Amino acid sequence: MKTRGFEIVKEYLDKDIHLPVRKTLHSAAYDIEAAEDTVIPAYKPGIKPTLIPTGLKAYCQEDECFLLLNRSSGPKKGLVMCNSVGLVDADYYNNEGNEGHFFFQYYNFNTEDLLIKKGQAIGQVLFTKFLTTDNDLTLNNTRSGGFGSTDKKED
Image 1 (cartoon, one colour):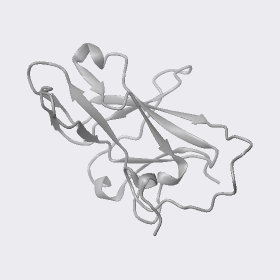
Image 2: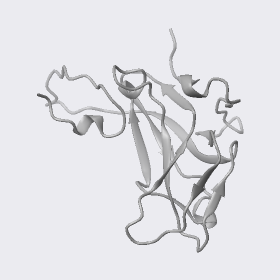
Image 3: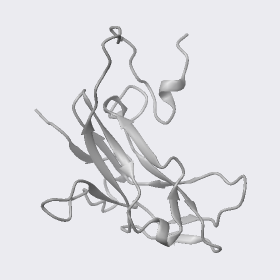
Image 4: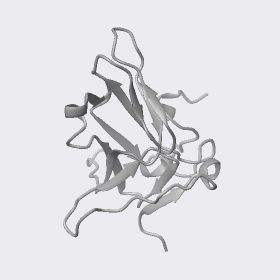
């Protein structure tokens, strides 16, 4: 049985995507690379964040999730994740309406557009367990989609 890890999404299988690795024995997170060249425009009020594809999906246990984190050098380069930390639930992987491809969402606070090259490290993934409260009811809702799918109302 698989515990946790990364796989390449179908769309990127032939695109020379590298599976993430920790850089040292005691590194907590896995370094993630950009799956393709992406231009992040210089920030202006009202601009939407730029999604950088990873070409990856990740799986983990039911009581785990993974966090998308900025690299420590990101802000020095003008890169700030629009949501500070991305949280991806275990059921995002291979659900009915979404293969599980995860992206990093960035703003560029430089005065010039910034080119992120394919293979450039863009962020980190940290797997972690989570706790639930005593008053959790038995949930039977299942995810069927990608970004924002837990916000969708049941019919």
